[in-house]
Length: 321
Image (cartoon, helix red, strand yellow):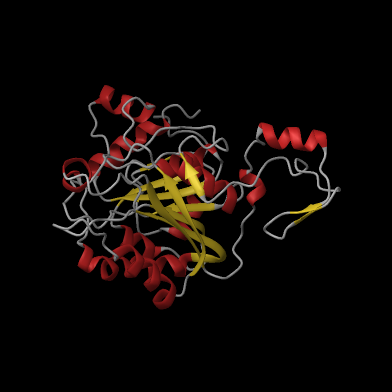
């Protein structure tokens, strides 16, 4: 890994932001730390981050090797992180949280732990819920197997929640940065022109309507791995042939078992930040967030507490010149 390039994240920046910690590695735009993320958050000055985007360990009823808190204690575990995240965000900053659901142990019924967390983040911590989005992950396994593939009383789940929180009701955001290519139907409609009409919904379509003037269609709140707004990695979180996984196998490094696709942080980093803004991931895992931020020329800070995972995450930056 080439870490001798000119660092956009200067030493002065580091001294101001995290003078009590030493980075595990640096890139042109970012700093990665092997540390406890709550300690890092407490060391950051208030109003210093533009975007926090992360996917913390989910509260599952079976234990994962990377560690995950129990459902009955999840909200209590996460709120100290949330308090610090709100403190360190700028007033126009955003906090994007990817979190998955869970079944109750021994029952074909769903836990409400993530909804309890959502309510606590708004009512106790003081975040605003800017929008709820969904990550469509077709690679998800049909779990729990007992209810989905054995007894056949439930169906396969393919979405996870992505909640976009803000510190104020009006965070920095621009959906023109994530427009999707127009469909063939929209292009045909625009060429043909439209007649003035009132749709069943009550919306008035006027002859002056130009459907393709905006440069693209506004994306929905369902984020997909193959979303056409992205041009980076297009894999689910279990890809076995992406560059990170292949490099890990080459070097004999441990592959993180719960990675989210680059499409997810890319979408929100594009929409919610500008070049050189500061992006933070307190549960970085294989550091997908840092990798995407680097490609988009945003400064970033990533924190991971497992040595094997942060060491392997360096391999993501081998191909960035």
